[in-house]
Image (cartoon, rainbow, N blue to C red; front, side):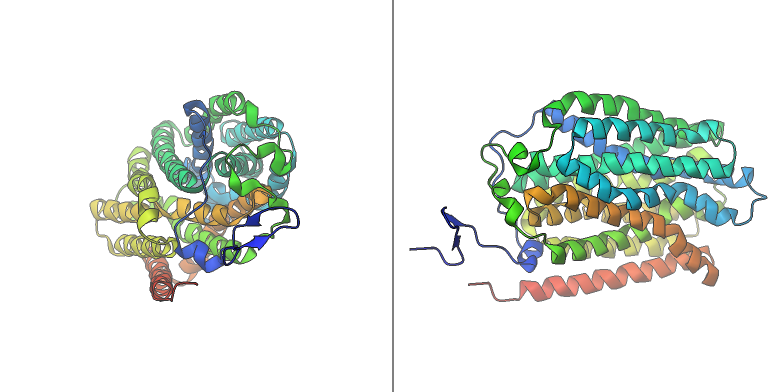
Length: 434
């Protein structure tokens, strides 16, 4: 007797019933993991490659006051200083779809090499370009390289780990990104204390990381559709070209990711100026306080796999937004550096499980043949939010002072947290599907 919900192929055994978008958001993962997960070298290469994404923007946050002073006579320097941080995100948004198409069809070694070179050249442009226009162009070049590395890291994460193993690995990836953020922000702060251009030297770290990835991931370089990526035991890759792309889940997760990053990036773009209001102007100490947001994200990212086994993805979304909103409100009213540090820590605590939750939810829904496209979509959402962040905070600053802008962001985050919590409770009370 055929199992309810199963459907028979024209010449094959019954296939698993399709899960609804609600099930993908509310239930635990059930896809099998591969029998032979990647070794430690491949794991380290993908983790380090993913960690390079946080370095692209946040590294130069401690340099912003010095950069603003250097170009003080330029009209609109407040907004332009924020765009120096987030302009790579615009290039990511414009080129990520192409990178996703290439990741699904082309030689990934060549794509990785080209992306690493563009990343290094554009990232270090602040060391050798004097004019602000040239610096902004360099940031765009950095963004093109970043799009390639981000899409490749996400696609390899989805290809090489499946099911519960993927959920656990994405938590590790979030933790590695947070740890990398701590290192590069502190390093950027130390170099910015010597000279505001010094933080741009941090981008040279991409060179050894790219070389390691080229070596370790060489066996997975060429993508020839699903057949080239399928290995024994990977049940989710079979015949996936015929499966439709899950636009409903992708739209929901992508919109949340965009809003999450657009509000979160008030930390690297506006926090240095907020700290200045309470008397903290030393670039190294600004870097230390800024690094708290990535340091406190570590526990939530590491615990994500365990959290996901206990509660639904929607519940994690609600918790993340609510805790981040609390942190933003603390920043809005903080009278001292110590209290501001507490607010930054709360924002990081909420952010920790959020990014792996977006990635795992989307990748559980997409067929294997579309993982490059899904990676590109998530990359566009995340970096589109980064680019939009200074525009969002800039419009808030036109209506409020800096503390008022943080308070407005807190209200938005709390409101979304309540809406998501309501959705999670409603889905929990929904009768189980037959």
